[in-house]
Length: 376
Image (cartoon, rainbow, N blue to C red; front, side, top):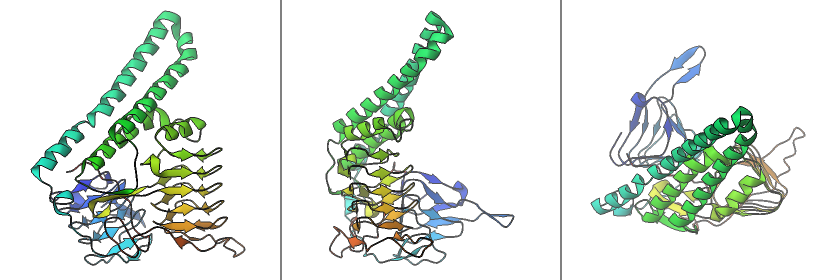
């Protein structure tokens, strides 16, 4: 592991990982995991180069390299051959046109001692949701024990569900309170890695992942209870919405119209984090729009009325999917049916950086979202 790396979560064989200085690994990345095929298991080293970025659910297989100053996008694979400064998207991957990033000095890569101490003070607070989680579990166990002692196992079986429900509600309320206390309302804009708003947003997200998700959100996915909770976090959600995911990282920037559907495992991604700049923008699913299971939609994207995006698909930054059309793939393309008809129109590029890339903005919309983790 090199100096100044930022790692959220990574799966693979640690002894086979080569992570260079300043590299950034976002959520659920895979580096140097073993490969199985044809009765053989392949193990080899994989490298993430200096100041390279591996996005959410990005994969770097054995023997492959994310190049220096390069990028592998969300849900994308690292190709066999790469060159320094190049970027790739999709699976199978294709070359992505992207301008070189501008280094913001102390606010991106080369932080000052004062900033490191300030960030450390915020990072230490990540223990708070862990402690709250533990306290809720102990309290729940004590209440159940009291029910058994006073009324027997029958009473505990009858009332136990209410006790567990109350535990989940407390976890949800504490998470909502923490979000508003730490960050208030999220707004579109850009923030470098070494800035308090980024650290506080990560701390608020820890409450969601450690506290609300296991004790509440996972159990109520697809129910009105999840919708109420997401509204409490700031999301604008219409009537009759079916939502099976809590992964709305900056809920204030999400709008789900009446009758919209968000499938299980989806990420409504309202931020980008490559080049160590957190770039925030809104995501909109209009009335009756559908984001299929395990789909990802990036900032500034819009699904118009009745539009459908199929499972495991990626909607790129700034894309607008036309009303009533059907799309699928990584990145999305017209969804072809058995009759050869696509049922799709043409996507339009939405709000972007007027042809510029860098700092989370792009003219093509084909950039990547990543959520920073603790420094290593």
